[in-house]
Length: 74
Image (cartoon, rainbow, N blue to C red; front, side):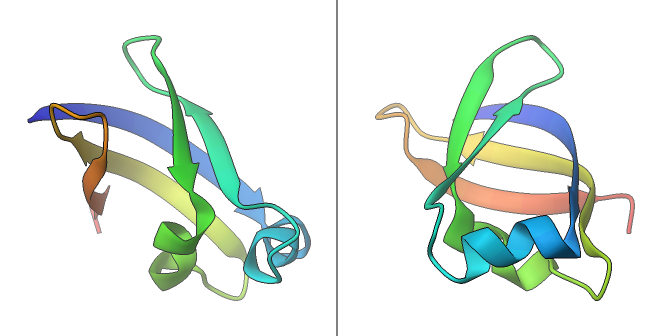
């Protein structure tokens, strides 16, 4: 499994588009420069009143599927 680290800052109003299904994926640039396209539904557990903010670690398997997503330093 490969791990990718990235920062994310999505204000609440913007994340509502993802939450309501208007956008299905969130595209982020990992710390190593790789671009990841993550299913927005996987971020729901990290939503607060301010939106989604933090430094995350995504675990990707050999088939390029998301296996784990964790917020770091909380």
